[in-house]
Amino acid sequence: MDFQSRKNKVILNKNGNIEKTFASTKALETEISMLKLLNGNYAPSLIQKLSTNTIEMSYIRGTLLLDLYLKSDINNAKKLAIILSKTINHIYFLTNKITFDENFRNYIITPNFDCIRIDFEESIDGTLESYIAKIMAFASLYDTSVDVKTTFISTLANNLKPNSKILINEYKKELTFLANRWDTNFPSDLYNLIITKAI
Image (tube, rainbow, N blue to C red; front, side, top):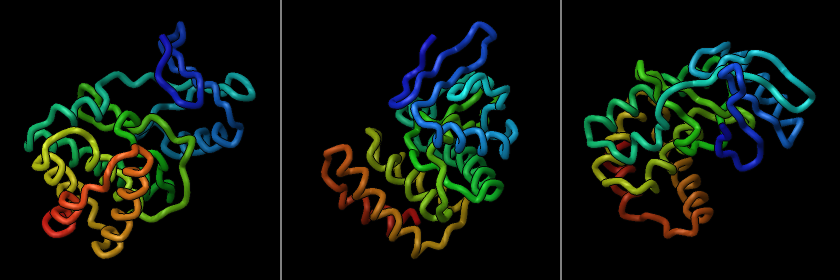
């Protein structure tokens, strides 16, 4: 079984584990470093390095955060934000890094309702506010109701307790970047609603 990846080859091997072959040595080294730090907590377990550009790690069973978010009502959006906030809190304060791409496909919700981050190759230095703002930008542009978006974002922010002023600045920057990348209009009404009521 092959998995969707923009840059790398990701397969489920005969042992039921994930093999990830990297196009970039730097990306491989970053992923290994993060997986070692996280040690299977809110992340896959690193099993072994198979070659100069391939690692084997545990397969995480569950449902993509994106799929659950798109189907959420207000109550489910709140629950998803709470478990995602635990994951973000753990990753950030343990590693002092943030993950660059906050596409909700990079998170899996397990049958036990844990939230597992599955991609660390683009982890970088950054603030908690920047980390949260990246998630908020994706949450804002996905195709779901305004009530779900504002509930998810306010719950996430309330649980992680960032500096609100810094977060608003970072959110505008990330939302502008993502809207441009997706070739869509900046959602001014939603942005104003979120900075006045959700943060």
